[in-house]
Length: 105
Image (cartoon, rainbow, N blue to C red; front, side, top):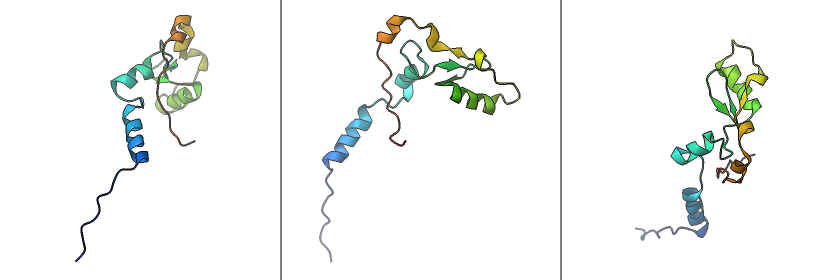
């Protein structure tokens, strides 16, 4: 017969990782919605599809979206609306989105 197993204690590294995961904005939920859509905060939604109004952070992503969703129509880069082009200079002083990206590169 064996004795009681020792309870596993949480390490400082594990606790720090839990705190970091709980307090870092990962871009989801209602708080992340502002970051994803907000041109006034310097958000990620820089370009808008002229056909369906979907947003993308760059032209390459918009081309991928266009090829997947609107494959029968020709891709015209000049028709893509840049939301950040019309933002006033005071918006640059506002807080930037605090979304942490992937560690994988």
